[in-house]
Length: 247
Image: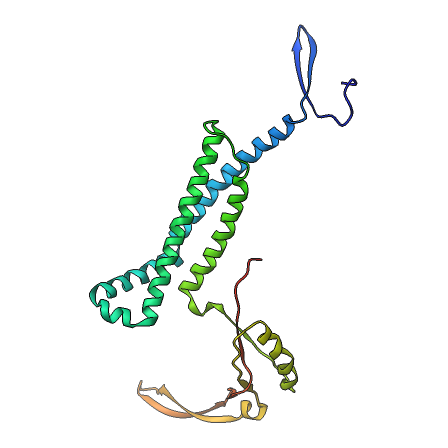
Protein backbone atom coordinates (compact mmCIF):
# COMPACT_ATOMS: atom_id res chain seq x y z
CA UNK A 1 0.00 0.00 0.00
CA UNK A 2 2.99 2.29 0.46
CA UNK A 3 3.34 2.49 -3.30
CA UNK A 4 0.16 4.60 -3.51
CA UNK A 5 -0.28 8.25 -2.60
CA UNK A 6 -1.74 8.91 0.86
CA UNK A 7 -4.84 10.65 -0.49
CA UNK A 8 -5.57 8.12 -3.23
CA UNK A 9 -8.80 6.13 -3.00
CA UNK A 10 -8.13 2.41 -2.91
CA UNK A 11 -10.21 -0.72 -3.00
CA UNK A 12 -8.54 -3.34 -0.79
CA UNK A 13 -9.69 -6.96 -0.77
CA UNK A 14 -8.14 -9.13 1.95
CA UNK A 15 -8.49 -12.89 1.83
CA UNK A 16 -6.96 -15.93 3.45
CA UNK A 17 -4.97 -18.28 1.25
CA UNK A 18 -2.96 -21.23 2.60
CA UNK A 19 -2.94 -19.71 6.10
CA UNK A 20 -1.64 -16.40 4.81
CA UNK A 21 -3.33 -13.06 4.27
CA UNK A 22 -3.51 -12.04 0.65
CA UNK A 23 -4.15 -8.38 -0.16
CA UNK A 24 -5.50 -7.34 -3.53
CA UNK A 25 -5.21 -3.56 -3.90
CA UNK A 26 -6.90 -1.66 -6.68
CA UNK A 27 -6.81 2.05 -7.34
CA UNK A 28 -10.22 3.25 -8.49
CA UNK A 29 -11.07 6.85 -7.55
CA UNK A 30 -14.60 6.53 -8.91
CA UNK A 31 -15.54 3.31 -7.21
CA UNK A 32 -16.21 5.00 -3.85
CA UNK A 33 -18.41 7.60 -5.53
CA UNK A 34 -20.34 4.85 -7.25
CA UNK A 35 -20.78 3.13 -3.90
CA UNK A 36 -22.22 6.32 -2.40
CA UNK A 37 -24.53 6.71 -5.38
CA UNK A 38 -25.72 3.14 -4.94
CA UNK A 39 -26.38 3.78 -1.25
CA UNK A 40 -28.27 6.98 -2.10
CA UNK A 41 -30.39 5.09 -4.59
CA UNK A 42 -31.50 2.52 -2.01
CA UNK A 43 -32.14 5.19 0.63
CA UNK A 44 -34.37 7.20 -1.70
CA UNK A 45 -36.16 4.07 -2.85
CA UNK A 46 -37.23 3.51 0.77
CA UNK A 47 -37.98 7.21 1.24
CA UNK A 48 -40.16 7.34 -1.87
CA UNK A 49 -42.16 4.35 -0.66
CA UNK A 50 -42.68 6.15 2.64
CA UNK A 51 -43.89 9.29 0.81
CA UNK A 52 -46.36 7.22 -1.17
CA UNK A 53 -47.71 5.72 2.07
CA UNK A 54 -48.01 9.21 3.58
CA UNK A 55 -50.12 10.60 0.76
CA UNK A 56 -52.29 7.49 0.85
CA UNK A 57 -52.81 8.04 4.59
CA UNK A 58 -53.72 11.66 3.86
CA UNK A 59 -56.44 10.50 1.46
CA UNK A 60 -57.85 8.34 4.25
CA UNK A 61 -57.58 11.09 6.86
CA UNK A 62 -60.30 13.27 8.37
CA UNK A 63 -59.59 16.45 6.35
CA UNK A 64 -59.72 14.76 2.96
CA UNK A 65 -62.73 12.62 3.91
CA UNK A 66 -64.63 15.71 5.09
CA UNK A 67 -63.82 17.55 1.88
CA UNK A 68 -65.00 14.59 -0.20
CA UNK A 69 -68.21 14.46 1.84
CA UNK A 70 -68.83 18.16 1.19
CA UNK A 71 -68.04 17.62 -2.47
CA UNK A 72 -70.61 14.81 -2.68
CA UNK A 73 -73.27 17.11 -1.22
CA UNK A 74 -72.42 19.79 -3.77
CA UNK A 75 -72.49 17.20 -6.55
CA UNK A 76 -76.03 16.17 -5.59
CA UNK A 77 -77.18 19.78 -5.45
CA UNK A 78 -75.66 20.45 -8.86
CA UNK A 79 -77.26 17.35 -10.33
CA UNK A 80 -80.72 18.01 -8.88
CA UNK A 81 -80.93 21.77 -9.44
CA UNK A 82 -78.13 22.79 -11.82
CA UNK A 83 -79.47 26.25 -12.67
CA UNK A 84 -79.96 27.25 -9.04
CA UNK A 85 -76.61 25.71 -8.11
CA UNK A 86 -74.53 27.72 -10.60
CA UNK A 87 -76.33 30.94 -9.67
CA UNK A 88 -74.99 30.56 -6.14
CA UNK A 89 -71.49 31.98 -6.64
CA UNK A 90 -70.11 30.84 -3.28
CA UNK A 91 -71.21 27.24 -3.79
CA UNK A 92 -70.00 27.19 -7.38
CA UNK A 93 -66.61 28.56 -6.35
CA UNK A 94 -66.27 26.08 -3.49
CA UNK A 95 -67.25 23.23 -5.80
CA UNK A 96 -64.60 24.25 -8.34
CA UNK A 97 -61.93 24.56 -5.64
CA UNK A 98 -62.79 21.12 -4.26
CA UNK A 99 -62.50 19.55 -7.72
CA UNK A 100 -59.12 21.23 -8.24
CA UNK A 101 -57.88 20.00 -4.86
CA UNK A 102 -58.95 16.42 -5.62
CA UNK A 103 -57.23 16.53 -9.01
CA UNK A 104 -54.02 17.78 -7.39
CA UNK A 105 -53.81 14.88 -4.95
CA UNK A 106 -54.47 12.41 -7.77
CA UNK A 107 -51.63 13.98 -9.77
CA UNK A 108 -49.27 13.96 -6.77
CA UNK A 109 -50.12 10.32 -6.06
CA UNK A 110 -49.42 9.29 -9.65
CA UNK A 111 -46.10 11.15 -9.72
CA UNK A 112 -44.75 9.63 -6.49
CA UNK A 113 -45.87 6.14 -7.58
CA UNK A 114 -43.93 6.60 -10.83
CA UNK A 115 -40.83 7.66 -8.88
CA UNK A 116 -41.21 4.67 -6.58
CA UNK A 117 -41.48 2.27 -9.52
CA UNK A 118 -38.46 3.79 -11.24
CA UNK A 119 -36.24 3.56 -8.15
CA UNK A 120 -37.41 0.01 -7.42
CA UNK A 121 -36.52 -1.12 -10.94
CA UNK A 122 -33.15 0.65 -10.83
CA UNK A 123 -32.37 -1.10 -7.52
CA UNK A 124 -33.01 -4.41 -9.30
CA UNK A 125 -30.78 -3.24 -12.19
CA UNK A 126 -33.69 -3.46 -14.61
CA UNK A 127 -33.20 0.14 -15.73
CA UNK A 128 -30.43 2.71 -15.41
CA UNK A 129 -30.37 4.93 -12.34
CA UNK A 130 -31.00 8.65 -12.96
CA UNK A 131 -29.44 10.78 -10.17
CA UNK A 132 -31.59 13.77 -11.17
CA UNK A 133 -34.65 11.95 -9.82
CA UNK A 134 -33.52 12.96 -6.32
CA UNK A 135 -34.15 16.64 -7.05
CA UNK A 136 -37.52 15.76 -8.54
CA UNK A 137 -38.47 13.95 -5.34
CA UNK A 138 -37.45 16.98 -3.26
CA UNK A 139 -39.58 19.21 -5.49
CA UNK A 140 -42.47 16.78 -5.04
CA UNK A 141 -42.11 17.03 -1.24
CA UNK A 142 -42.42 20.82 -1.44
CA UNK A 143 -45.55 20.47 -3.57
CA UNK A 144 -46.95 17.92 -1.13
CA UNK A 145 -46.46 20.29 1.81
CA UNK A 146 -48.19 23.11 -0.08
CA UNK A 147 -51.03 20.73 -0.88
CA UNK A 148 -51.54 19.83 2.79
CA UNK A 149 -51.81 23.53 3.63
CA UNK A 150 -54.28 23.99 0.78
CA UNK A 151 -56.38 21.04 1.95
CA UNK A 152 -56.48 22.38 5.50
CA UNK A 153 -57.62 25.77 4.23
CA UNK A 154 -60.32 24.19 2.07
CA UNK A 155 -61.81 22.39 5.07
CA UNK A 156 -61.26 25.36 7.43
CA UNK A 157 -61.79 28.55 5.41
CA UNK A 158 -61.35 30.74 8.51
CA UNK A 159 -58.03 29.15 9.48
CA UNK A 160 -55.98 31.77 7.64
CA UNK A 161 -56.58 34.38 10.32
CA UNK A 162 -54.79 35.49 13.46
CA UNK A 163 -55.87 37.90 16.18
CA UNK A 164 -53.47 40.52 17.49
CA UNK A 165 -54.30 42.13 20.82
CA UNK A 166 -52.79 45.24 22.41
CA UNK A 167 -53.49 45.35 26.14
CA UNK A 168 -52.71 48.27 28.45
CA UNK A 169 -52.82 52.04 28.61
CA UNK A 170 -52.15 54.38 25.69
CA UNK A 171 -53.00 51.75 23.08
CA UNK A 172 -53.05 54.38 20.33
CA UNK A 173 -49.26 54.67 20.51
CA UNK A 174 -48.86 50.95 19.78
CA UNK A 175 -51.62 51.04 17.19
CA UNK A 176 -49.77 53.71 15.22
CA UNK A 177 -46.63 51.56 15.38
CA UNK A 178 -48.19 48.29 14.20
CA UNK A 179 -50.69 49.68 11.70
CA UNK A 180 -48.11 50.52 8.96
CA UNK A 181 -46.41 47.15 9.49
CA UNK A 182 -49.64 45.26 8.85
CA UNK A 183 -50.49 47.49 5.90
CA UNK A 184 -47.05 46.82 4.39
CA UNK A 185 -47.82 43.08 4.59
CA UNK A 186 -51.20 43.70 2.95
CA UNK A 187 -53.05 42.38 6.01
CA UNK A 188 -56.72 43.12 6.47
CA UNK A 189 -57.19 45.23 9.60
CA UNK A 190 -60.34 45.43 11.72
CA UNK A 191 -60.14 47.29 15.03
CA UNK A 192 -62.14 46.99 18.24
CA UNK A 193 -61.44 48.11 21.81
CA UNK A 194 -62.07 45.74 24.71
CA UNK A 195 -62.45 48.06 27.71
CA UNK A 196 -62.05 46.57 31.18
CA UNK A 197 -63.22 48.80 34.02
CA UNK A 198 -62.64 47.29 37.47
CA UNK A 199 -65.61 48.93 39.20
CA UNK A 200 -67.94 47.80 36.40
CA UNK A 201 -66.40 44.31 36.33
CA UNK A 202 -66.76 43.72 40.10
CA UNK A 203 -70.15 45.38 40.52
CA UNK A 204 -72.68 43.12 42.27
CA UNK A 205 -75.81 42.63 40.19
CA UNK A 206 -79.08 40.82 40.85
CA UNK A 207 -79.92 37.80 38.73
CA UNK A 208 -82.83 35.38 38.71
CA UNK A 209 -82.19 31.67 39.04
CA UNK A 210 -84.42 28.60 39.12
CA UNK A 211 -83.93 26.41 42.21
CA UNK A 212 -85.82 23.50 43.76
CA UNK A 213 -87.14 23.83 47.30
CA UNK A 214 -87.57 21.02 49.83
CA UNK A 215 -90.76 19.89 48.11
CA UNK A 216 -89.02 19.66 44.69
CA UNK A 217 -90.96 22.66 43.47
CA UNK A 218 -89.03 24.95 41.14
CA UNK A 219 -88.92 28.53 42.34
CA UNK A 220 -87.33 31.64 40.87
CA UNK A 221 -85.11 33.41 43.38
CA UNK A 222 -82.97 36.51 43.16
CA UNK A 223 -79.23 36.19 43.74
CA UNK A 224 -76.31 38.57 43.69
CA UNK A 225 -73.11 37.98 41.71
CA UNK A 226 -70.31 39.93 40.13
CA UNK A 227 -71.01 41.32 36.71
CA UNK A 228 -67.69 39.95 35.34
CA UNK A 229 -67.93 41.14 31.79
CA UNK A 230 -66.16 43.53 29.49
CA UNK A 231 -67.45 46.57 27.64
CA UNK A 232 -66.89 46.34 23.89
CA UNK A 233 -66.51 49.46 21.78
CA UNK A 234 -65.21 49.78 18.24
CA UNK A 235 -61.51 50.63 18.17
CA UNK A 236 -58.82 48.03 18.41
CA UNK A 237 -58.81 44.39 17.39
CA UNK A 238 -56.57 43.50 14.50
CA UNK A 239 -57.28 40.41 12.41
CA UNK A 240 -54.34 39.72 10.15
CA UNK A 241 -54.76 37.42 7.18
CA UNK A 242 -51.58 35.38 7.02
CA UNK A 243 -50.24 32.68 4.74
CA UNK A 244 -48.96 29.57 6.47
CA UNK A 245 -45.35 29.08 5.51
CA UNK A 246 -43.15 26.11 5.78
CA UNK A 247 -40.93 26.23 8.83
